[in-house]
Length: 249
Image (cartoon, rainbow, N blue to C red; front, side, top):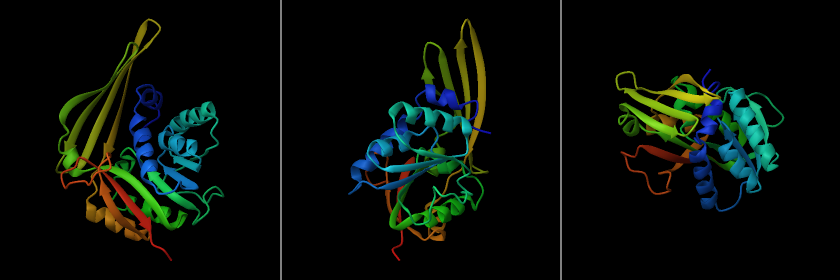
């Protein structure tokens, strides 16, 4: 399982910073604070923590118990009451914390949905989101694009270089298979010794047509395509933030 051994490394390297910053930007551009929010593939809780600190009631869902353990500890330290659910976002459970039609906002940030690689995976998530959002509620997520993946030319990206930790990500994109790979390698000092770890993550690009079809399957419609800086996204943007909403009944 990905994000198991890598979870504490992800946290120590500060990789949640992107999700934190994007959640803050989203809040700044919402006309009103959403009362109930759902954060899918919440990881260590970056967006959930921001939303809860702003006063929203938040539920975070992730399939990695190691990532959720860190999220729980972060919420505890900040004295934030967030509900955490361990589940696959493609098959959300029948849970009293997930009442249908009760959420004003759903987020899934930091290219989480790129990790869905089967053709029907995105539609499964959108159907679940459509069931849980109230009419007019928004689903906001970001994705690495095909244009962005095409820049992954077998190079090493240094994610963190500290006294006791070095994290490198080797990027590769297989154009024929339409699969992108991040091979995370880390070296961590424990006492007098350095320990090595490795984890490979696979992502796929989703076209605008595929995204629109998946959203439609959940009774959602695309409203805007933006950059993470909240400007209109061009066709060759490496990452796009998609703003969608549930059709009013």
